[in-house]
Image (cartoon, rainbow over all chains, first blue to last red; front, side, top):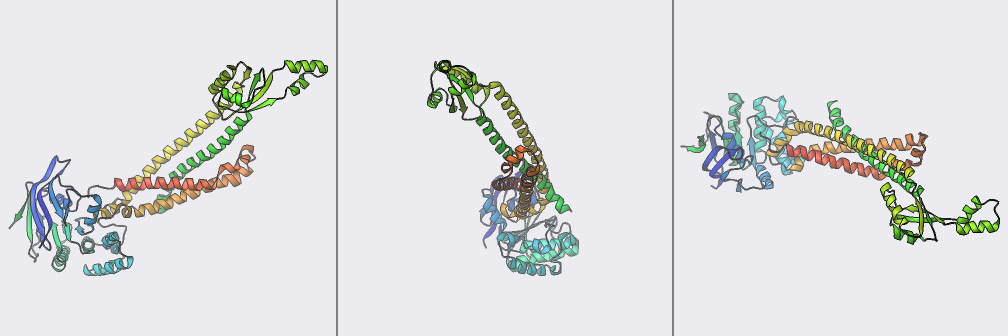
Length: 224
Length: 271
């Protein structure tokens, strides 16, 4: 299997390089792998995730995602890469003025799919996350767990190469968390999507084989 | 209600800027015609020993555009009533030649003095009368009115611009969430700003229509029945159809600047 993500001697920093968060990290992740990244608060988990979708540029080293080196990337190429990623946030990041269905098809809208295709896909995706009856509601009319399911449906909308999830169950109860893990396991298993999850704690109910990286003292280490 | 308020908050300052632009256009046109009137109505008197052609006067100063000879016979007939024919012939022979000399544009009094100096440098020119004091007072009054109106228009534009910036900050807050989410998922600028553009372009059209309506009312209703000669005579200068294009162009330019400043100021904000 080919590498989907490769980091070599990667350094990430804020304040123009003055505040290093990750230093000289090297790792690679293959297509279809499920990866957990854990570490204490403030260790740089979310920073690494932001770097993976190009929000933060590497200060040193290389970070290649989907064949694109994020250390030297043009804005247009970065936009194109983001259309192949599914991103899930702890705070859902749904557009509250849009209906659930419109939120779900955002990646398709950006890719320029027709309204008919968008409608069909919205129905299919919402059925998949068991929210079909909520299509015309607005995000704030849903519970936290339901909103996160909308977030997962949106992340899956365009069959992404990689799903990046930042504490996806951080605000959810156990039942809702289990539903979300289940959906992500399915995506990894059935679509061979690479899933990279930043979390405080690996769920006990998780059934798939996975890799585990821990961020400590600015380093990224794999736990075997 | 909130929807109308949001639109008015952008339409009103935009209208104020457009009104300023239209005032400027109208003022420029009417002052142009006033300047033309002053220029055409003004002439200096040049007295020469021998007849002088326009080309000769123009070779002394390039601002001279026309010259009109004052018939000496008319002068003699007025000043020598009851005088014998031979005496009036003598008076005619001894009279110098008089010319009303017009200028190519409305000039400052210092330039008038320069023209006088240039003309008087010619030995054939006996005397030049510029009528500088009446010309100067008219010119100063005209310049003062022009300056005050431009100052007022400038002030209106600055205040309105600040109101637009204020509204842009509200837009920035209102549309931030959506634009950030769209940016994360790779939406290009044009798609991220699409909704803002739609709203702003509609507002630009409304502001243009309302501003045009104000001036059309002034032109066809108020000016026509105002009883003010200057207004009634210069009615056509008050609003032209081409002004709609100028106003719409200005409104769209302001809208593009406003929207892009909102879009780019929302970029790179931490999620």
